[in-house]
Every structure is written in structure tokens, then in C-alpha cells.
Amino acid sequence: METLFEKHDILIRNTKTNFVRSIMDDIDWDAHLIALRGPRGVGKTTLMLQYIKLNYQPYSREVLYCSLDTMYFASHSLLSLASDFYKQGGKHLFLDEAHKYENWSKEIKEIYDLYPEMRIVLSASSLLNLLMGDADLSRRCVSYEMQGLSFREYLGLYKEIRIMPASLETILCNPQNICTEVNGKCRPIEYFNEYLKFGYYPFYSKNKSTYYQIIEQVVNFTIDVELTQICKVDPSNIRKIKALLYILSTTVPFDVDISKLSVYTGINRNTIIAYLRNLADAHIIQQLYYDAKSVGKLQKPDKIYLDNTNLIYALATSKSNIGTIREAFAVNQLSARHTVEYNKNGDFRIDGKWVVEVGGIDKDFSQIADIPNSYILADNIETPIGKKLPLWLLGMMY
Image (cartoon, rainbow, N blue to C red; front, side):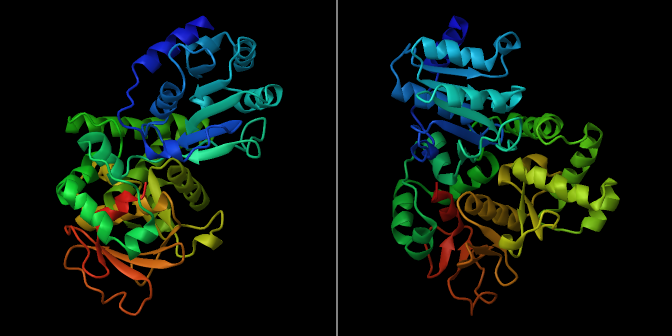
């Protein structure tokens, strides 16, 4: 166990806290059991290490971070670790990559029951289902979903420009103050165009080719490993899933025709719908429906986008359409906090309350003129023009 503490100390010592994601303040760190879920590469590990560094003294033995995919657990059980940690005065256990430990749910449930004073934080793939495994943790666990960087967080991390988050209602109904603050600190359009290409994942190092290679590696690992291990996808279908993703990445936004997809990939209808759901849960694609409340298990989506704009630039084999980029950004940022539905009059309906049309600076209101609570989100503008708002404002929500 001392080996784990030594690794813990090194990791904490090397963790920087000059920029901390806004989700840090949203989490109830005093909860008995917390699950921090999200796609690979969005910063779950960093967030846990930052919390420890900010809230515990150096070399404290009341807290321990460890990753469950290390060699230590080849000869030690998680349950025995928790027992030893508790006996030595341990109070807060951080378990990274929980889904990579074979009996994760059963042993975490037992730890939860045996040591009610101990707080447990586990991180895992966004594909992790708390109902899976040998124990149902859904009633015991407080779960948080972690996204990639918002435009606001990108400005904070890479440009050291601090902006307070704003609600969607404030953005739509009272955007002037936010625009004044942002424009007083930077030229948002310049940085927004950078963000669309390189800003969603917090591992950009100013090497464009390497950044996109890492994104491809993340996607490949998610499909090759996580879909097969967590979702029990047949490994023989992995190439077909990648063929499906290739079709989607070259034609997004995709008007879904399941019959054509079935012909192209050789996958039957119900299996394609299941795989699309897996890709959406993994935050590789976004599925939109006309009526999100009545979505059935085998209902096909009405529209498909890649999850975020950086994925589009990394995976698309031809020049990306700017209209697609704009819409994908809007869907990505809105869906992090709100219900987004595809809308025939106007692009999207948000929480059943607001309708937004996404476009360029010359976009007019002809499609949404008679719709109440409707707005245009326009690219390449810095300040609101009536109900025509800067598109980048959506990146201020978290």
C-alpha cells in the first residue's frame, strides 16, 4: 500500500491548480459515493487530483488516489485496499478507471456498506452504467457527467481570460452584459475560431497534427476497447462500427436513413440503432429527435452530429462545412445542460421552451418570424443585434 501512496504523492506534487474546471464547484464532494463519468481525455483524472491538492495537506494519509488499471491490483483486491486504508485512518478514497477492475461494482458496494464514514470518488467511462455489474449502485451513487472544455473554459485555460459562467436564460434574454465583459477582455471571434478546431479537449499543445492524432486514438480506444468491454459489443463488428462512423463523419449533419446505413455497413436495423446509442453514450456522436420525451429504445434518431467540432476536424476526410461546424457547436454546448430537440421551424428547440436558428451574420428571421421565444445564433458577430445573438455566447454556460 505504501507504493500507492508514493505514486499518489508524485501525482499530487505534479498537479497544477492554476486553472480548475467549473464542474469542481458543482460536485457535492461530501457525498458518500460519487461517480465522475465522461469520455476519455476530458480531464476526469486531473479534476480528482486537483481536488485533493486543494483540500488536503501534502503527504496526508487521510486521502488516497489510485488507478484501478495499475499492476498493484493484479495481486491485490480493491476490498483489501479499502480495509487497509480505513485501518490507517483513511477517509477519502479516489478510484480512477473504475470500469477496468473486473468486480468493480460488487466490491465498491461492499466498501460502501462496510465503511459509512469513508467517502469514495470513482471515475469511469461515460459508457459506464451504474446498473451494470454484480451490484446496483444507482441508488447509492451521485453521478456527474463531465464534458470537454466550454469556450469559456478554453479562454481560461489557454488564454488566462477569466469569465463567469451564465445561464442559458441570461444568454438569450440579457446578453449585453456578458458581451460587454468578454469584448472588454479579448476579441472573441478570433479565439472562438481557434476553439472550434483545437479547444474542446484539454490536451492541446499547439501541435495541430499531434492533437488530431490523439483524438483519433481516443476514438479508436473507445470503439476497440470500451465498446467491447463495457457494452459487450461483438468484437467482430468493430470494423463495421468504424465504417458506420466514417459514413457519419463525412456526411454530418446526417439525416438518418437506417435502411441505407444497413446496406452500407452490413448491420441489421436494430443493431445499428443500438450501436448509434453506444456511440452517443461514448460522446462520439450526438443524436437528435423531434420529440425527446417519447423516444423508444428502437427508435432511430432524426439527426446525427459528431459530438463536438474538434472531432469533425479530426475525423472528416474533406473540408468541413461551416454550417455543420456551427450547428455541431450549438448542439454540443446546449446538450451539456439542456434538452435539445431537432426542430422543423428553426434548427433546435431547447427544453421545449426556446427555438434557435443557427447561421452566419446574414441569417434572417424568415424561418422563425412567427415563433415565440425564438432567436438567431449568428457567427462572426461580437454583440447582439436585437434577437440575433453571437453564437459564441453558448460557450459561456459552464
